[in-house]
Amino acid sequence: MDANLRYTAKVAPGAANYTLTEDGGANRINFSVVEDLGGGLRAVADVGMRFGIADGLSQASGARPLFQGETRVGLVGGFGTLKLGRGLTAVQGPIGGADPWGVTTVAGTQYAPGFASDYAAGNEGRIDQGIFYTSPNINGFTVGLSWSPRKLATVGTVNATTPLTTTSTKNHLSVYAGYTAGPLSINAGYEQNRVGDTMMPIWGSFNAGFARFIAHYNKIEGGNTADRLGVTMSAASAYVQSGAMAAAAAHTATGTVAGTSGGVAIDGTINNYGIGAIIPMGANSIRLGYSTWNGNGSAGQKDDVKLGAGIRHDLSKRTYLHANVATQTRKNNTGNRPDRDNTKNTLWDAGVVHAF
View 1 (tube, rainbow, N blue to C red):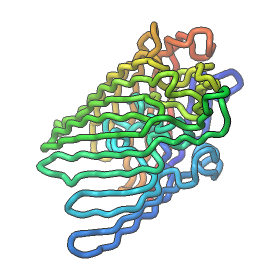
View 2 (view 1 turned 60 degrees about the horizontal axis):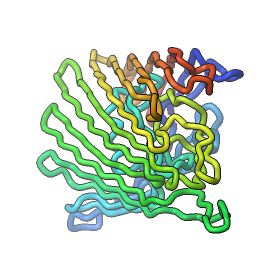
View 3 (view 1 turned 90 degrees about the horizontal axis):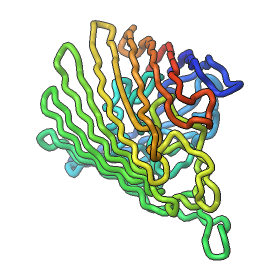
């Protein structure tokens, strides 16, 4: 259970500066099943239900599936873990470690924590109809793979010869590799979503005892117009937490962009760099992060910058308080959003989290 008060200094006309919300979808109930089949083989199943603490609806005020977290079943053995169903992609599972806040809170500074699989609401970072594999840890090395077929739900036509698809034309593919040796962790990944967007993140951390230092780089490239033809764009492909640069994308039936999301532009390239640290101090931990990226990757986009800081105070093993603040430049989209054009926005949140 996670609830916090969030403040955003610059908002869209008529929008509220203060909201009672959550951080990173922490409100969830998970059901996990394990059956020992003998010979080192186990059957596993996981179902994750997420909900909004402010309204009691399924996450995002009912826009996302009831079982937003995951719905997967599979086998675990000496070969690793193989699951089928819907869940976080191979890269999206571990990539939260590239951000001091785990890509939650207003201070989160990692770009593309919600790299969408098919631009459908609820699929940010997740894929349906998926096959998921994670290898066992071998001398510190772990690899992961997720794959899902393309979806071609024809519901009409763009013209006499071109079908209108509601989802995608590409197979999903996500590959992850990680290595851990003592205090050092190094990770890399590659992911292609169902409309041809790709990302190639590299991140690592080093635990020096008095602090854990984190660094990441991510190259995000947008698919072409043909890959997005007829796609219903109901979710951003990627963003910095609480920092999407514009409203949701609105693509026309011919594939023309009528608006841009906080994600990567068609044929655009985003280069994102970030550093951070987690400093333990008894029951407290200080979190710091810095990130920069070139808007949505369109030609001429200037570098945006986000700086975050926060504190977490553990009341017990299951309950903690947190407070975070961030400043974020918004140098792009001039003329499109008066509240976000060439300005610096300030955000903060404070709340309580309890695990049961």
